[in-house]
Image 1: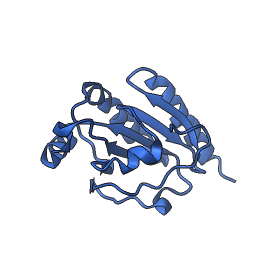
Image 2: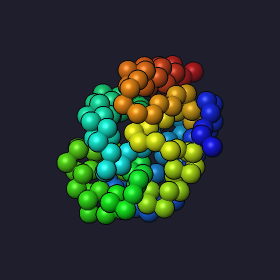
Image 3: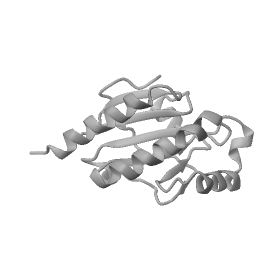
Image 4: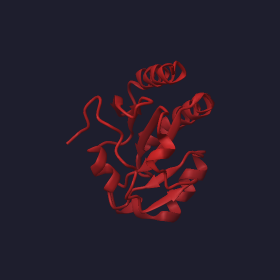
Length: 154
């Protein structure tokens, strides 16, 4: 079942492997806006959108945004750990990457799509979901709104 707005950020547990740090614990993200993006090695659109995701990471992480990538295999060709590591390096992913070969995170999020983008506010509530490569401007707007809320803490 897909996540609805205001749903809390699920625990990021069950990944079969973490790249670039991790595992991410719930406390690591507490009080911070979070972008979780699902992608797959075999997904052409994922590769095309990754420079945009990386630019958000570079632009907004200094302002408090936490970015977490989830590699969600779509088929047997996506299960090759060496290939995933090679593509992570080639695409310039420096954010933590959860390798979700058992689909535990996919199930927690109710996610069926790659690429998919989930924006959570500083309270850990879902504020926006976007699937596919269209609407990336809206995703960025939601990131900015989440950051504005985080920067305006009492």
